[in-house]
Length: 167
Picture 1 (cartoon, rainbow, N blue to C red):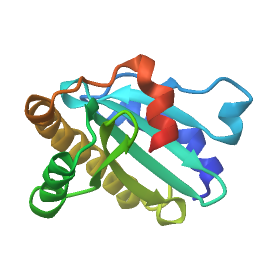
Picture 2 (cartoon, rainbow, N blue to C red):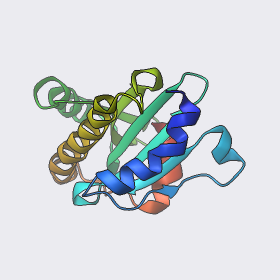
Picture 3 (cartoon, rainbow, N blue to C red):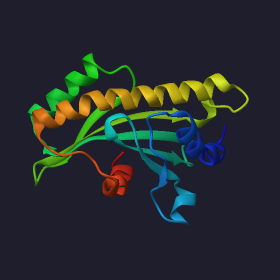
Picture 4 (cartoon, rainbow, N blue to C red):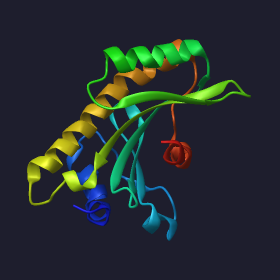
């Protein structure tokens, strides 16, 4: 499948097959959307998620916002590293931040190669959906605990463009 093919079907996959997901919303206006298609939706426990397709690398990046405005410190980094090492079934968690402000955010992401997906081979699409559902479930479990331990706040729909550009 090409990235163009995936861009055509992705919103419908989320809307029709991810039971806990909200209806996907286009993040960027046209014509930016055609060059870099991306949709926001919430998953289990209202975790903001972005599905962004990169035509140049033929990838789908699914990025989930776990906590915004957390301390950008070694302690926070150690917590994130421990989660990556001990708790994740799919994806990776990372802390990005600003040295000057000392604030950051925690994101989770999985990258799918478009050529590994095929409408003719439905198990590849089923696997995509299962991994996305698992990511949502993991994020729903981890995000509240991270915010309790580190502070910060949940990502909201108003943060969709920020999440897209940082994921």
